[in-house]
Image 1 (cartoon, rainbow, N blue to C red):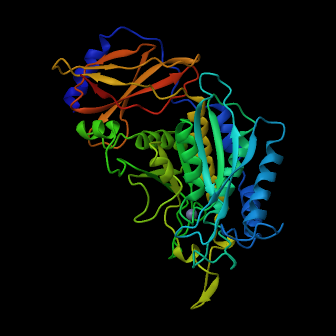
Image 2 (image 1 turned 45 degrees about the vertical axis):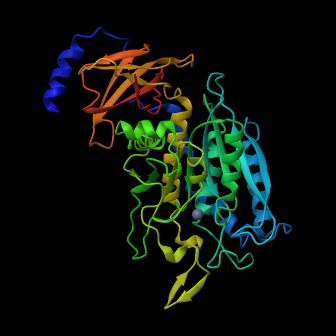
Image 3 (image 1 turned 180 degrees about the horizontal axis):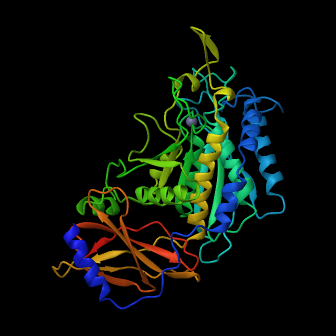
Length: 450
Ligand SMILES: [Zn+2]
């Protein structure tokens, strides 16, 4: 490869000059401010309040004002309305009745609490980014709707992070629309998230990315070892489908297994997260989820959207999905004293930085293609023009075929095609859109143009 880069440098030097790149590595003051405002103390208070409802099991009491899932969701909605007052944040319930199924013993109303912050740029308002946590909880028996199920980590941690982001970010403006969602019935089969994702699909909504935060509460594993320096970001490659879509077939044909929409989104999240939250690693795990486990990103993946899962680095299984009890002198159960509130705030900051960066940036370029008619060692990339008024131009990024992340970038200005003096067969290319402030979109993978 080194030889090829020497040739590239010479060839690039001969290319016509383009306008200067608008500082794509620069930190945005607005994002720094948002990251700073995220408060571990408020996150802790939210989690302790959620735990106070005793159980948030999906089939638990909905009448009481102090116990059960009904009281919990009314409190979440009231909190979001309170902190969103005077901002454009729109808070509502998204409700449906789930019929009897494997984990639902009687028809049950499933209610998501959804807070939408509409984008302020007409060209971007239809582009949405969704961030979620699930507020329902469970204990050892997933059908036990009355026993204590504090769910302090699984998933009051994700719920509190999402509420904190909504409250902080509602005061700021973004080009694209942000949806802060706390969902129900994750433990009963991802029912709340699936209902919302299905409506989005039916309405043909442009969800450019979705993150679920599920079990982001603790920095300690079951041996007591602490690691508060990273978070796992699960990112699917190719989806498991009976019949592969055209997009998936193209990825397979061209070796693009590591360039699915979710992987491109994960690279963008890592870039933004690590830029704004120093000394904290976004550890991309190239998997849909942990072995045989799942989460609320899956209903989005199954509908063709890019979706990711944030989870703490090493889970302590004594403190999730377990009745509260003492065994051999060890207190078991998902209790608030096992959370690390500074750690949760770091994960919330990574989410907020990534969401802000994505919602300030232009959309990822569409219809990116590589011309294949001529057999040649240069690469001719073409794409459709973006429509945002603050677009500065495009960046071509590339990496070795064995590399996980982009290694090189070149700003090429406001054009819709560019020839790179490098072979499409020897590296992976992506095209990104950049705005005048230096906000960069995720990369788009070029399909072959025959
Ligand atoms: Zn969970």
